[in-house]
Length: 201
Image (cartoon, rainbow, N blue to C red; front, side, top):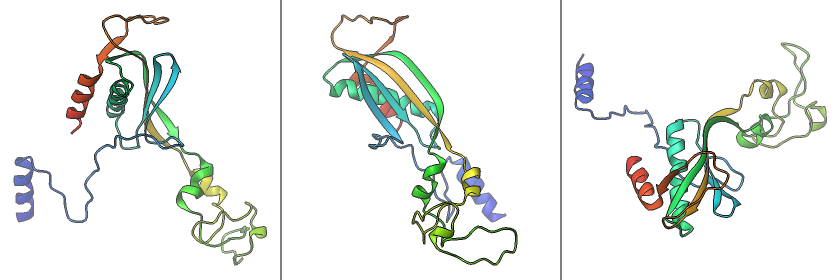
């Protein structure tokens, strides 16, 4: 009862309590994506003063956080490229699947030992050479051996949120947006970056 009373006091005070052995949730990560993509932002030029800004979150990041990070990157990129404002011509936030069954072994390591095919439960066959494995040669990992097909069949790719913005950057009071079907929303780059950074602290 004393433990419950202490917990109630902690919750009433609004203090975050972390029990021993429980890992606190990590805050969302804002960073550039790696050379092969993945978590983070990318920017790609599509034509003069127009760029596609993409932010891909991890499995824990909510769609609104991912959208904010894409907007933050658009603001930072605009400033870095020497411009004052950016206009969002199109925007898309969606769930995408990342990874593939083929990279399970490369990401997690393969299974221990080289196991020959079994014809049924209780089979006493022992580990053999790579040539005895119907899945092909060893991929290495923890002791070698390919990931069994049954594991690959059950493996499901992770779903993450991804925000994609098509922006046009510029400076000064005059702007035109050829091809735009409606007036885009225009953001002041420095102010937008400051506001988003302050909101995610």
